[in-house]
Amino acid sequence: MNALRGIDILTYCLYSLIILIPLILHLRRLKRGEERARQAAEQGKLFSEGPRAQHPHIDTANCLGCGTCAEACFEGVLAVFGGRSVIVNGYKCVGHGFCAEACPVGAITMVMANPSMSADMPCLTPEFETNIRNLFIVGELGGLALIKNAINQGRQCIDTIATRMRQGRSTASGPDIYDVLIVGAGPGGISASLRAIENKLTYITIEQDEVGGTVAKYPRQKLVMTSPVQFPLYGKFKRTELSKENLLAFWDMVLNRADFNVRTDEKVEDIRKGEDGLFTIHTVNNQYRARAVILALGRSGTPRKLGIKGEHLPKVMYRLIEADHYINKNILVIGGGDSAVEAAMGLARQPGNKVTLSYRKECFRRIKERNVNRIEECIHTGKINAVFNSIPVEFKPGAAVLDVNGHQHEIPNDFVWIFAGGAPPNDFLKKVGVQLGACDLTLEASQEASQQPSPNGQLTLAAKC
Ligand SMILES: Cc1cc2nc3c(=O)[nH]c(=O)nc-3n(C[C@H](O)[C@H](O)[C@H](O)COP(=O)(O)OP(=O)(O)OC[C@H]3O[C@@H](n4cnc5c(N)ncnc54)[C@H](O)[C@@H]3O)c2cc1C
Image (cartoon, rainbow, N blue to C red; front, side, top):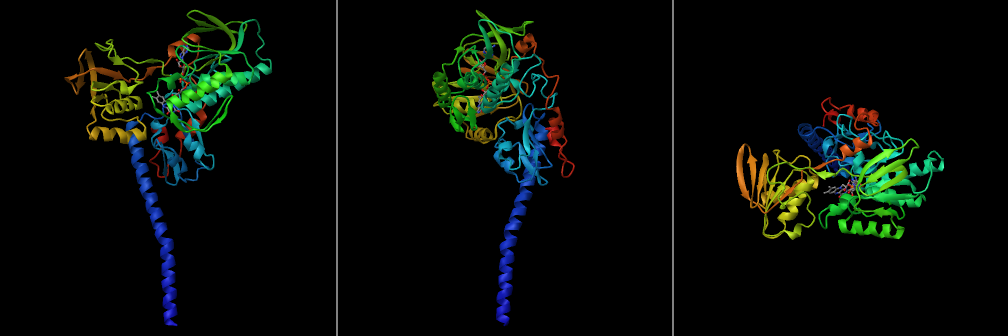
């Protein structure tokens, strides 16, 4: 009897342990997760001016606190804190929206930053229309980065135009008048063009450079990360990782099949709207007329220059496409963003190159999570000499001069790459009459996002970071 009771107690203890051990482990994991979130939040507060463009908005009433969103975001923007998802590193958001896709209860939507953060962004309606009727902006120029966003917006924008045409709201007609003229042949412009064909609209696409936009300028064999997207005239494009070359080849295949009506090497200089509601689009050698215009210009614009002595030298460049063309060289890369870091790592992989990476701040703040570890590894193994708090002051034929904490250092140099961002085409937008920054059509959502209640009163970071 006693032996039986002993076995009962033993079994009871065993079952209790089976339940208790995973519970304790789970609670410890939660605590560690919260500690990591708190640290990330602190770091975000220190390093961040806040989300500059798109970022997730969490509907706290619906959030389950399951953490699926935080796991889906490999940029480290979100974390679970006090049983709810919160934004801890808003400035790192690149807008891929994986968090929104992953949320099982649809509690996340992507919104834009508040107006003070997007003062140089065009003011757009939810249909991507500017303050000028029938003049639309899609893709990165509207503030939302990423290929899939450009493709989705290009498609949706044409649907709006096609609906208006069908409803006869744009009645002006005449010879040589296009239903829509698309400026820019990056992913946004390509998608809009193909959708125009699907909707049987007359269209023309004007591109100042080559088809492919920013993607065509990525370094050779760059791995492009994207999400499944509905691609006009093709259907669901499901690849999530592919080389730049393969992505361009895919677009090329669909465009060739569709007999893409594009003029390349032609820059749009001005756009005027007449009293008849028609647009006249001016390029250097031509004039076009259209009922609607879509600007899919991207934000890369013209690379920002440093304005220092020797910057005109042919060895100074602003874009790296073929890293493997450079071997056994002394190379200086300037900048602290993903483009600079990726270029430096690509060049450091080539035999014999000595790569110096100069950045004006004390550490890398705005780079993607996966680049953080890779660049640290390159610095620790000596493949890249990172010089923080440094400012280039002069380029000479065989050297470059850096100011490091007030002291000038001359280093041997064969090539320089500057990644100081691009000057977005805001002057062009102003000339055309597009209103910038003064309104925020997602203001309500942004305000809600910034007022997320904090579990312990200390984490109002959605507003601060
Ligand atoms: C280095 C780098 C890596 C990236 N990696 C990824 C990634 O892995 N995944 C991802 O989703 N996104 C990535 N992006 C972002 C992505 O490339 C952009 O968000 C996307 O290309 C934006 O598309 P878009 O059509 O709006 O503009 P763009 O692709 O920039 O195209 C705009 C086009 O408009 C043309 N144009 C501009 N002005 C005029 C004018 N006046 N007249 C005629 N034509 C004009 C330009 O020449 C250009 O071809 C990356 C960006 C960079 C810089």
